[in-house]
Image (cartoon, rainbow, N blue to C red; front, side, top):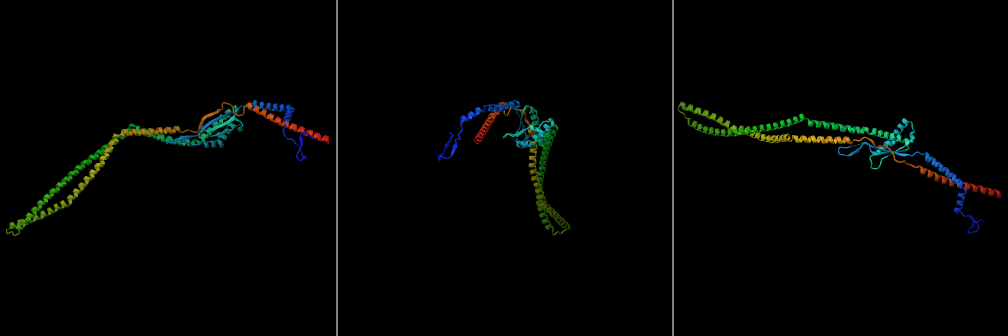
Length: 404
């Protein structure tokens, strides 16, 4: 029994010790050192060859700012969000730009790969590609072309908004020019002056009418007193005439009879006059006085209204210059705001031109050589294992053949 075999507790079943012997491994590696050196040398040479042939790669990055504008209340509005812009670029515009450039310059479009990203909390879109120096012109041209295609997709929105601001701005400038026109200023001042003079004239006319009405009322009151005196006198005269008529009722002479008849006629005439006077005193004059009084009250109310109108007209005339300057200032502020809005309109454009990174990116030549060496060592170990396993198989086969 060899040293590598032992009995179990029953004393019947042998087994081999499977522990790894580091000494055997070392011996094996030394025995196959030539194979290891050759394989490592081959892979190292391949690594160096690839590293020397490999051209350095650079990043080509450009940033695009989507179209935006500022509302009258100062709020920034994106005509196209960065997410939407990224989607448009990713889903067609980048490929379109690549195909156009590839067809024009007869290159393989598959060599160009451009990624689109939108940094968090940022309004810009980044375009990034990787390639060697020979592809520098291609990446720069394609990223510019993609930005132009994106700008065209949003141009109608920006043009519409800009046209609206332009129209409002032209209207505001025209209004300011009219306000500053000396002829227009003179017309407005003349109109205000005419309004003032007209209001003052109307007020003066109402004052004169009031005087006339007051005089008429005074005359009517005087007429009432006069008619009252006449009525009283007629009443006394009628009473006296009646007494005389009664005294002459038994006239004895024709003269006395004629006198009695005349007195009777006179009494009748006086009675009619008294009736007319009483009608005027009780009906006509009171109605006329009431009408005059109402006219006076209406006149006084009109005077108050017209006085207010005259004062307003005077205020407007006196304050015309200050009010006119405020209007000009308001129009100028409006124009400044519109110009500011117009200036804030930004089309989709490149914020930064496509640029090449200052240093190469990706795996360096040294790393390639080191990795090739490491891979060569790993392959060499595998080759040693395979060679050792094959030798053991052959030895066992020969031993079995000799025993037979």
